[in-house]
Length: 122
Image (cartoon, rainbow, N blue to C red):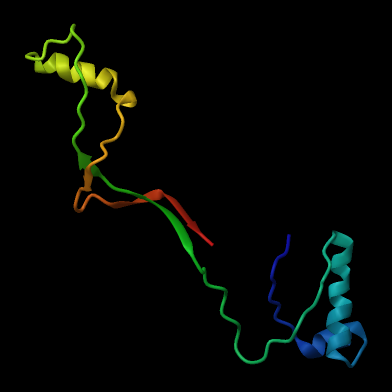
């Protein structure tokens, strides 16, 4: 794992504490203590001017849902009375998961919405 850290360094103090006149040697020496904690400084550089802007996310992945509407036809078994609308509805609900989606379907205008439970910023 890698982390990025920005330190505000008082140049005179770090050189005095490190016993050197070189800022490079002073910073490198002071960062060396991280080794004891299992952290190793690969490199560092002085930031000139104002503080750097933090990295902005480059992309976001999110869930999106929408409705489509189409017609489907299924055969009714002999034990379901086609004149009994409640019996027909009950039968359709009992086989609902086995009914294939319609081949001919249309997007329901305005039905799309953001799935606020799945937003992943990278």
